[in-house]
Amino acid sequence: MNTHLEKSGASAPADAALLPGLIRQFIRIAERIPNTLLAFVARFSIAAVFWKSGQTKIEGFALDIVNLEFTLGWPRLSDSVVGLFRDEYQLPLIPPEIAATLAAFAEHVFPVLILLGFATRLSALALLGMTMTIQLFVYPDAYPTHGTWAAVLLYLMVHGPGKLSVDHWIARRCP
Image (tube, rainbow, N blue to C red; front, side, top):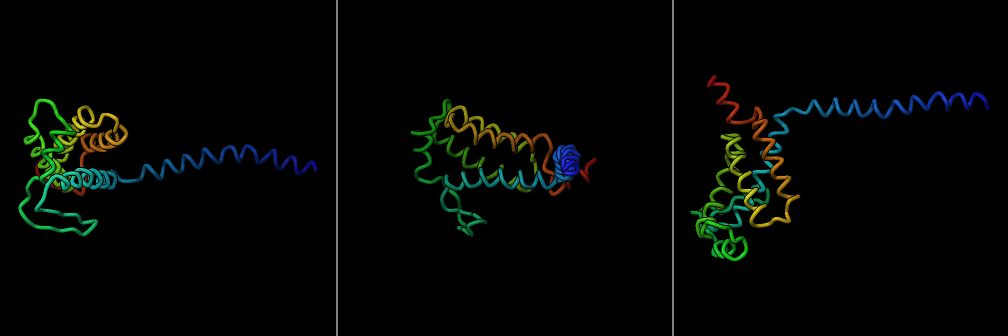
């Protein structure tokens, strides 16, 4: 019986040390995830969010590689989008026709640039400005979603697009 007590007493410190050791090992493994992978996932994810939103604003052109939807044609604003900007979004200082056009344009151009990793930091800044506008003037209760978008965009602004990008290719060739 004494032997059993000694064994459980001796294993308690070993058990207590096991958890911090596992945590340290997990942290070491997590720290090995390359920035290029993180940046690519961030670029792809945030580009998809804004691209899909932009696709709801236009007709005549559709490109959805996930759902395999392709309609090639000249894009134009959908019939309902100006009304949406006039009646629901109600942005101050900018007419709904201009706001709808700018939003549709931004939600197509900047996601493509981010996905390619070209002018990534500036494109992320533009989409961050759009996110802040949406948060402040359109959907102020959607801060969890907009906070997530902002975090991804800020990550790209701070760390850049990673090595799998046009920006990296240009930086290597232009000292």
